[in-house]
Amino acid sequence: MSYALYDSAIVLAKDALNSLSAILKKAEAHPNAASFPQAKLAEDMLPLSFQVHCVSDVAQKIVARTTGVEPLSLNRENFDNFEAFHARIAQVLELVEKADRETVNKREGEIVTLGLGPGKSAQLASRDYVNGYALPNLFFHLTTTYAILRKEGVPLGKQDYQTSFLGKYIQA
Image (tube, rainbow, N blue to C red; front, top):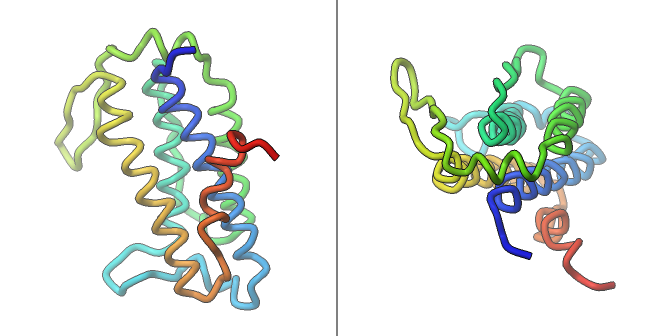
């Protein structure tokens, strides 16, 4: 079987959301979990709640831009607790799981618009959007989530991050 856009875009988005969910579930068991949504790595960085929002937002935009539908407008209002985080992940996972392999693969050369800030945008092929922008951002915010929680004392290890990606390929 050949490797196609669906495999890099949709499969990895799903794995990232599952990894995020596993990391957050482990964090919830920590005695200081209620303070985590506002935790930061550094004072000038955005908090955990923003990182979780970005992972879910990038994942749903991957689906939208590779299938030709409008992305959701995900609100960050009241997005400040683990219950909201898990509900958002479930909502986006549902979208990801419905993405059609054939549609995604046929649209790899379709031009999509990438917002680059107020009044700025770029036009690029769907595959270039996924590989040059979406996946790097997805992994950046997932890794930042992991790092914030480690800083806060959550006993996470590399396997907590990686199992959702690698587990399905390893024979038990």
